[in-house]
Image 1 (cartoon, rainbow over the protein chains, first blue to last red):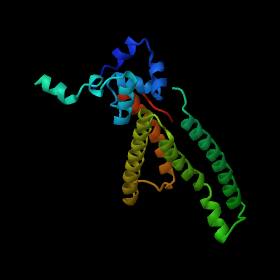
Image 2 (cartoon, rainbow over the protein chains, first blue to last red; image 1 turned 30 degrees about the vertical axis):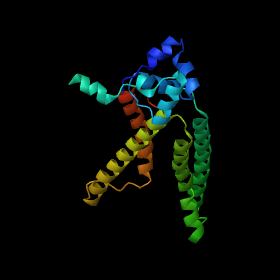
Image 3 (tube, rainbow over the protein chains, first blue to last red; image 1 turned 120 degrees about the vertical axis):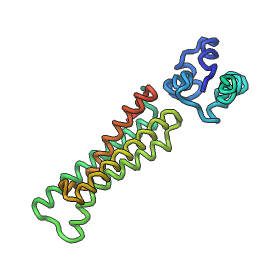
Image 4 (cartoon, each protein chain N blue to C red; image 1 turned 90 degrees about the vertical axis):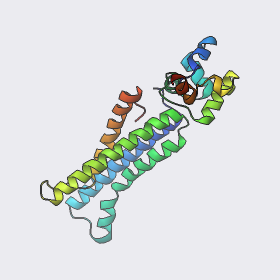
Length: 71
Length: 136
């Protein structure tokens, strides 16, 4: 799933390790989410949204919205 | 990959269970070689080496419950699914070959060896498809 995690993290000058510590997950998890190789569960997506104080849909791009754009 | 506390606990459990397995196996082989046991004691001694192996399966299950990192947990689940699919597939093919007298008899506990090999296969597939091999 496409997302803005890398942009949001970079805007705060956080490394992947910094973000991983704040979310209490591994750096590999952060990397997998940022690169779209892994879609986080709803509880983790909420933790990410709360950390950045943003609605989930401003961080994660809905696959439906993405596919409708393609059409 | 830094080890999480649950993974360290899993490692410790596997180390202790492996030591226990070695002790039970050596004891059983020695006892049967020297014909020291019979009846119930013989059955008990024969089954004892299996218990730590079952314990390792339980340790993997416990690790999956304790691991809080959902991505790492998913990698391990994928590994165990590949291991199960691989071991069961080879066992099924071998079973039919054996039934039709096209292959010799292999003791069924070798399925476990295949299963642990399958964990390695699962790690390779995780690495190829997700870029992370996971733990194990």
